[in-house]
Image (tube, rainbow, N blue to C red; front, side, top):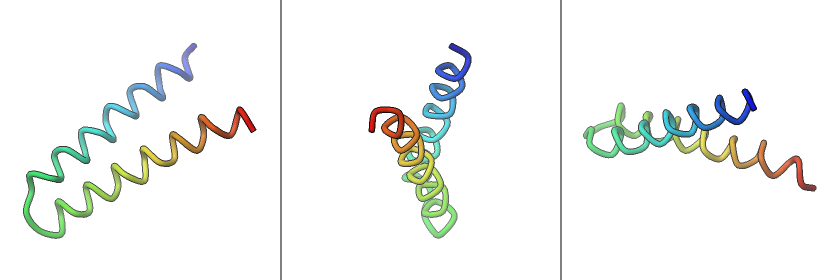
Length: 52
């Protein structure tokens, strides 16, 4: 149960990074979006690894 809560909070943080990075012009905004994207993709990988 604790792992699900941590994954949910991390997902919210990563999505915030993507949305906030979209409003910032320049490389810092791009870096925020890339970090958020990497986080979301890694969470999908961790989730799908269980069901292989």
